[in-house]
Length: 466
Image 1: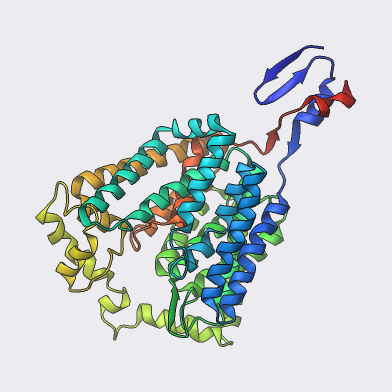
Image 2 (image 1 turned 120 degrees about the horizontal axis):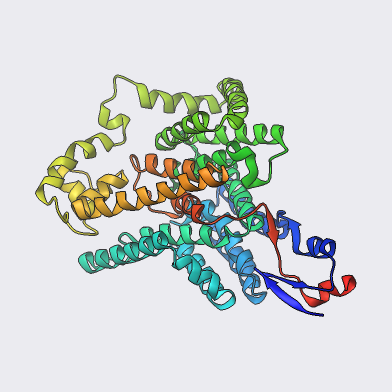
């Protein structure tokens, strides 16, 4: 008996071709144990939030993740570890202000270290990707300079979280079964946030004041809702293994779209509309679902307007278009920042005011101590032309990759993920794990994870066939 290696599959000459194909190829399927691990973490946590105990929910999700991720470490399951971590990101981002603020960073670093111990070659391959390596180095340097400049370690630390989330998606993208499971967990987390916040949110779903504790921000529901909506609408739903379940996709799209509307996140609305417009233009196969979704959304929203939820929808709509309110009020101060950026940029057009100085610059020019409410304003003010050149260079490089991937394999979702991130950059700083997942999806384009997976065939597995 002789053996040869073909990729990751060991082929034995005494086994027939049928035996080898039966062993070496298997359909990519959902890892239900991992999915229900995410359910066990985020479901009870958001139930506690809905009952009015947000701090208990925040503690619970961290404790539950510590147990499930700890088990994956013991089992040396690096794919399972990262899959659970990515699935829980939306809930972690929502509750981070109450307990373990940097939990996402710790989880991703833990996953990367586990990867280093179990699959170092895969990790090295990921970091040999020039875009990812450049992105990682720029993020770490930017954060370090912010710390040196201000003495605050948390200043711009979310940029590191952004790149770590993108790397996490890239690492598991080689196996569609784990990627789909992670995305299903993320979709579950998004709905868990919506349902948990529904009894507590006053106007905008995703933000609430519970017994004097302010929790969340509409964008923390809006961004994952947009991403989940794209996964359902584009590429026939293949990223969630829904290719043959048209009406399931319709139902999930209507539910997720309604969460997006109720979030009141206007930046997410704009990003979703831009991505759907591109999808309609470039992908005829998904137009039918989009049309059905549009009709479904009209019906569901009309019904929602007749319930107490309708007051929330109407209030947010009035806030956006009410002509009696100033432009500054209608844009939550964003118009004032866009008006101020030419002056701030002119003061230091080459290298900016310095990493970490964003809030001070906003306070100086607008009189309000806030962060820049746009990625491009933040980079322009803090790093000037140097930073903007690096940012647009990265976005263009990622964009070229997504287009190559689309032309080669017909997958449009990476393009849409990048479009969503680019449009989000006009209304938020886009420095967090939710946005990192979008960029990770866009950067997948360099590799192709097949719909059917090659798996290692051990001698024990082949013995019955030999």
